[in-house]
Image 1: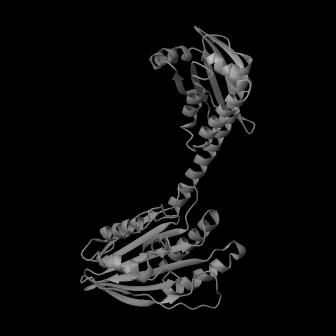
Image 2: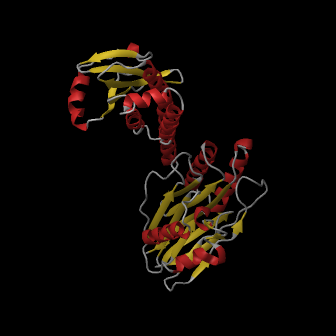
Image 3: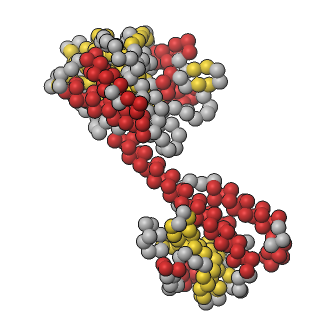
Length: 396
């Protein structure tokens, strides 16, 4: 049956279909750990009785990454045989033949972009026909490219995750009289560094600062503005600048970046414990309005809309002052919540966020944050295409 397939495939459509299917399978994953398994599943039993995939990291020694046999009961024994099989690293750039007891082994290099990524070894009891060798080399080229793409994707994703972590608060401080909850969810599969961020930190001996912001766009440019904003907020707050003055100076710092700058919406506030709750001074620079929830279930906006950052030179910010009585909740979100879309509707149409918050009376800060997150997720069936950040402050 296999010989008949090979004869027909060498004449055209069968091989072309097989090659197309193999290419689709290999291109369909960006997980580098899955590619060797797909390689083996593609070639066994069509081209060989078994397949062993060897890979190397940074030109290091070859290691057996995946092994598959048409007869699963023979995999363990084959693994022992392969442990004694010598593969010269210098031969990983050319196709070669290796002999094992009861097997002829075809060693096909996995080369991509001029680099050797490893070796695909195919085994069968009889000689490999010339057309099978050609097919195997073709599969090897496509497999190596898929493997290299998957590795590059994984490296970029890991770098983005590390960068994203560096842009989030290193710790969560203890604030007298404050119960708080924060949630941050980047959109997608960590391919891009998100533009949303939050912060909560100690400014002076008796005051703390919080911030939640959204930089236009994603990627390194957005990350640069995020880093600038976080460090500027912390530095100026600890030097005694009020929230309005901090935003004025941050606005100038972003504008001085020139063409590299991205505009930024930001809610920045100062928290001071008081005997009957918390005193909060805050500025909303183009950001979705902050909402206060009373224990009775009443919800009201507590910020005055002001200019976003990084657009206008001549802008003066003014702080709003509010009081949070015991049990009051202050909610701040990015537009990943307010602009969550379902068809032609946004979550915050007709005060949707306020209605969602009104259902949270009596909950802890963390429970409120989770309820808002869940409400945003359930508002639309499709996954969100935008980052999401939520900060909830509750006076104990």
